Amino acid sequence: MSTAKPAAESLTLKEAALKSLYDELYAKNMFPFWATSQGVEHDEIKQLMATAKAVPFVWKYSEIEPLLQRAARLVTMDDSERRSLILVNPGLAPKRASVSTMYTAYRLNDPDEIMPPHKHSPSAVRFGLTGTGNFTGVEGENVIFGPGDMVLTPNDAWHNHGTVGGEPAVNLSVLDLPLVEMLHAVHFDHKYTEIENGKEVAKKVQAARYPADYSQRIYGEGGLKPRFLDHRRGGGLSSPMWVYRWDRMQATLDALKDWDGDPHEGIVVDYIDPTTGGPVFHTINFYAQMLRPGERTLPQRETASLLLAPFKGKGHSIIDGKRHDWDQFDTLAVPGGCWVEHVNGSDKDPVIFFGATDAPTQRALLLYKRWGRNTAGDLLRLS
Image (tube, rainbow, N blue to C red; front, top):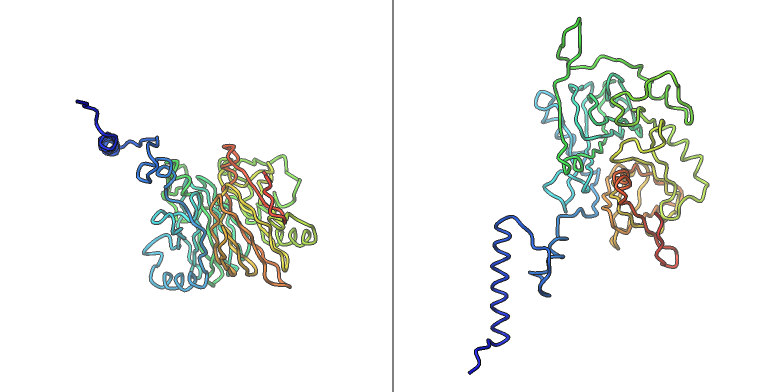
């Protein structure tokens, strides 16, 4: 008499043994990287890829601005040294991230409201939206900025924020905090001191060590660099030019508006470190992107994640086949790997995005790639 077990019974015993093995692995904080069946439950490739991912999303300034006003009434500087609204991507919530490596936050400061200095390892910029009295002091350079001006607050540089001039002002911030957090390298310091008469003294305001126009006076002429100055201020961890004025960017865009540009991006002008020609930070960089009246870009896909704020104009983007409408001062998240087209629906007004990208990190790690499609729909490798 045969003692062989039926195939069905052997399969059942194997499945039970596998389940026991999987249960023990998970209980001991391990992951089985193999696939033993066609079932979803045991498709480890799908499980491995099924981590939280950012999704395309638009945050509407028409919804943000009233919330900023309410927060300003309810939260004073006596309550908190910060009053910003961080944009959280629905695919990553509750993580404070607008895409996987960056977040955008909006800040409204009441008239003549100055916060104490602090510093941190994440790198950040402030980009003016409304009001002419936005204020950021960076390592002794006191910067007053308005709409379109971009101010750096580099990794480990002392800085403080606020407003001057008796009127409220709104700016947006972009930080690489989610990336730095992922690398377990976040630190903050709020104990600002200066040396006075040979003693360390706590201060709530930084003493000015540079003229207010230092960034523009020293670095404002492309291709020219004064030799007698130290260009590693702030530790040399970023561009030494800490404010980029909008009038210069606008003049550059105006000078290029009749060029063909890139059919997948329109006219793009990067902000750069004037001493190297590279990105302003080692981790993330920023740019202005112009779509001429009626312009529609061809489909493009890149590994880098993007945050786009329409500074001028309105329109829509097609991201992985879905339409996303945006207006002035909104923020649009374009996660890495998405196909995207941008459309300026106006036949007379340009669209100008303020953009942020994590491409510098990806390029440093040799991970950055970019593809596009031509008008016939053919796939092209662009970078």
